[in-house]
Amino acid sequence: MNQSKDVWTIGNILTWTKQYFGEKGVDNPRLDAEVLLSHILGTDRLYLYVHFDQPLQAAELAAFRQAVKQRAMRLPVAYITGHKEFMGIDFTVSPQVLIPRPETEILVQAVLDRLSGITQPEILDIGTGSGAIIISLLHILPTSTGIGVDLSVDALTVAQTNADRHGIGERLELRCGNTFSPVSGRQFDVIVSNPPYITNDQLERLPPEVLHEPRIALAGGKDGLDYYREIITQAAGFLKPAGFIGLEVGYDQARQVAAFAEQTNKYQVQDIICDYAGIERVVILTRREL
Ligand code: GLN
Image (cartoon, rainbow, N blue to C red):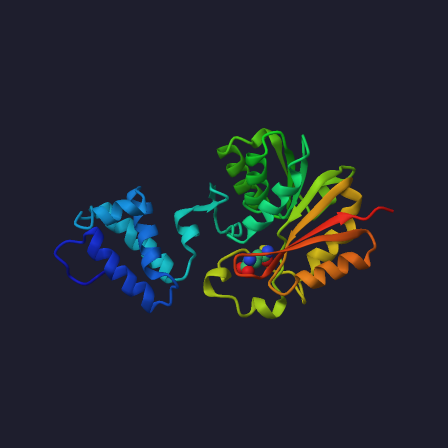
């Protein structure tokens, strides 16, 4: 963007930025250029297409230049715009929280399907982060209540912002602590979690974008399964008799998580659900009758 040009327009700056992002190894250079420019102009992407000839004001150009610089350093788009859509809902995100992923919608949908007969479901979300999972559940189920637990106070601040933005703040309690320590004595209809599941080896080889995300939200120990063992070992005591657990898992972890759960003799594996890419992504466990 330093080359001399008579006027920077929406059209020619998108062309330039696509090329630049491509050189920097960004995966979807044109899409990212459009998302960032529409964010700065306060428009949608369609607007760009019908205003290719519109010149950029100096302030818009300066703001876009800053965003392009950040994206070229492989900062994820969602951290630059401060937003990410999940379950059709707009979530505020910051580098203090993992960016909600489309495959996590599979987990939310699986939980929704199984809560449909329950009048006032009580939901626990472990490792709530931005709050995407529990806030979308509470938003879709108007009589539900929930608790979101996270080790990170900074993440809980983001979750609170999202809860307030979506009008479910009164039905959601956010508590700081590890797994079940903040909810002793409580029982839930569902315990849901997308815990950190990246193995130590994989942590060394993450794409540059993911390296900008909080390590605490990613690192699952040597085999990535530390949090599953902890959650599964303790969860039965926090479930109502007909309650269930919904867990997101990494691409090769579903069978190991299911096997671990069965070995405890406390659960039945009710389902293993694939994501859009055909990867076993969600494990559903129910309490075994004793
Ligand atoms: N889905 C994330 C990733 O692969 C990981 C999230 C997690 O550890 N729970 O980048």
